[in-house]
Image 1: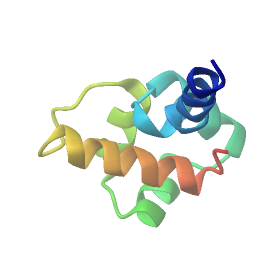
Image 2: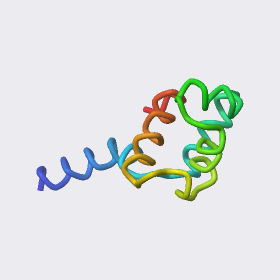
Image 3: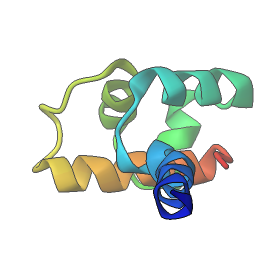
Image 4: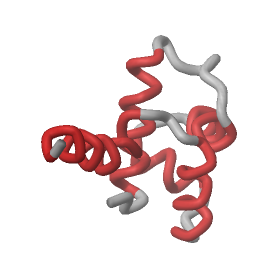
Length: 81
C-alpha cells in the first residue's frame, strides 16, 4: 500500500506540470501582476500563444508537446511549486 500512496503523492506533485490547466495558469498569471506582453517576452512566446495558454485551446502550437513545453515554461516563470 505504501507503494500506491507513493505513486499518488508523486502524481500530485508533478500533476500541475503534466497537464495544461488553463484555469490554474490564469490564477498564477493574475496573482503575478505581470502583463501578457511581458510574460510572452520572458517566455519567448507570442502574446497570442500566452493568451491561448491562459484561455485554453491549441491552434497556435505545432503539437501538443510544444504546447506542453510552453505551458511548463510559463509555470516556471510565474513561480508554480
